[in-house]
Amino acid sequence: MAQVWIDDTTLRDGEQTAGVVFANSEKVRIAQLLAEIGVQQIEVGIPAMGGDELEAIKEIVALDLPTSILAWNRAVVSDLEASLKTGVKAVAISISASDIHIEHKLRRDRAWVLESIKRSVDFAKSHNLYVSLNAEDASRADMEFLLEFAHTGKEHGADRLRFCDTLGILDPFQTYERVKTIIDQTGLAVEMHTHNDLGMATANAVAGVRACRGRARIATP
Image (cartoon, rainbow, N blue to C red; front, side, top):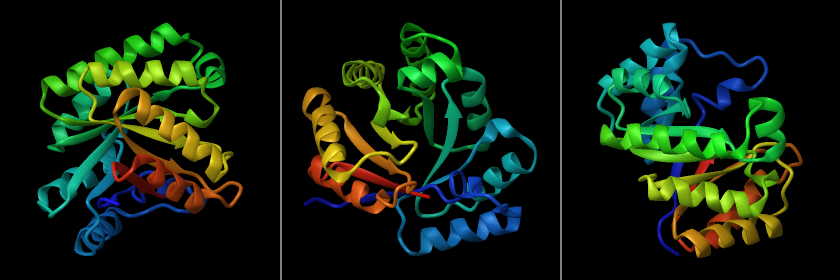
């Protein structure tokens, strides 16, 4: 199996854990330690939040660590403009993929999601950014639409798809089949982002890596 790349999301998703709030100095030190142990990519936060979050991201970018620094964004141009101000060279563009999220969280439809992907990925690539297109709640998405979601991202220049098991509902067998289908049908590199609600995050991440045949990235909260 080819090398597995790690995209560590401690500074963004990890801080969403109840009771966990990092001071800026802690964020900088965590980033330094992750780089020291060889993590290939660090998701440092959400520039569009502004304030201390934005300043911490700028400080980490300025360290010029030997790793890729990635910022998280919604699929809107204003978020990406905030990321550009930090100097990052990689961005996550995140938007819902499941109908339940699209209808009840976004209050939109599938067509709106696809147009948001086109617009935001086009903008990011026009600024020479590496793009991870995040399929939120991918584990509950209709597979036909998820494939259209991935194809749309690829056609507009996305470098990989992040498959998010947002509620941690999958088992390793389901994970393997779904990730393999995405890769077989689109040829797009897939990043596994697994949650541990049912205690299956590690097993699902490994199953995703197996399905990726060496083209995987694992996000680790």
